Image (cartoon, rainbow, N blue to C red; front, side):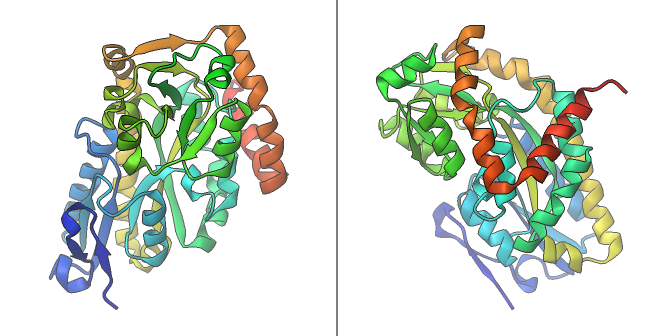
Length: 339
């Protein structure tokens, strides 16, 4: 049965039927991302995947990329993945919590180590990450890996944040994702958390609907939030684990040789994206420093952020169970332990 996707840009209707995307292809593959910045390692990874899947499949798969949120925000695209209208996207785990509650484990503040190599071991090469599949499949999702985006940082417009008290005193309206744990975390810090879709965030900051937001350096740059924000406080509160989300039914319907093609391309793209992001991290921070005042928390101020948000682990443990929380903690401990 043909399925139609409504593209946000220009109201263009994109038919994803066998006939409309490619006459010769045996399988059609719609790729979706929110990113618009061509210099972003994520943008480049998706362009690579589109090109390489078409090439390595000898045209048996017709891969087509839609960027800049053209197919909707995270929630809409996740629903499209579950319905089979989109085959591959990337997004943080947070907007997927309504679909897969166990992913709330990634919303525990201050749990991940700072070292990207340790993060990589936990996300790409651990029993914990492999075990996530069983939670994803009932919703129609396949976990195809993780991108490296970095830690979330707080940005604000008029109020420089050096301490938790700065947030409380101003009762800052902080944009958050539609995720109850992010809402709770910022409430614990004395803010007024305000859920807004990422595609609407720039306008909300520009119009003063919210005072600030929290994203990694990469997203702050690609979203050009520095144009409407004055301060960046390096809170490093949550690692943005951007997972690669695939339509599981579509993948399982592929013959084994084409599954191998898709797996190989994604493995190469993920490896390149991690390397590119790690290499670019210092440059991303330096570029932001040209536009914003960057505030480094003192050890005492950081400890206050950690203490205020500490109840989150017990709340998430109660909601998703001991197994997955302890699984993540064990994976982190194993990554930190010498071989």
